Image 1: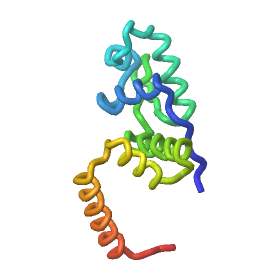
Image 2: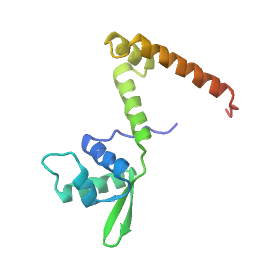
Image 3: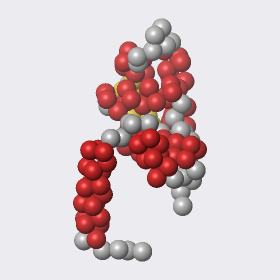
Image 4: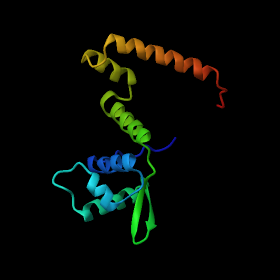
Length: 134
């Protein structure tokens, strides 16, 4: 089993969002598109991009005299990692615990639950049609 990746820090997540939205970007482009106020220093953004590179979350390519950074970690994968981490930490790994919490706090209404049930049934039918390689 793969070791779970550590979660992105809030600043790393902001930088990754810029890269996901803008595509491969140089430091200046990332800096200009960050929502941070006051604006982060160029060197701070550069340092954070280098940290993300060392962690294997982005790749960098030398373009002229500056690096261009491109995400290796997809938005979906980052979301899955964050959700898995939250379920482990807050609900002891229980997805059912998360769902019950959403129902009890009225953030998941009966109509949405019915839609989820239908999606789950559709997913099950799709998976039954695929060969199992286990």
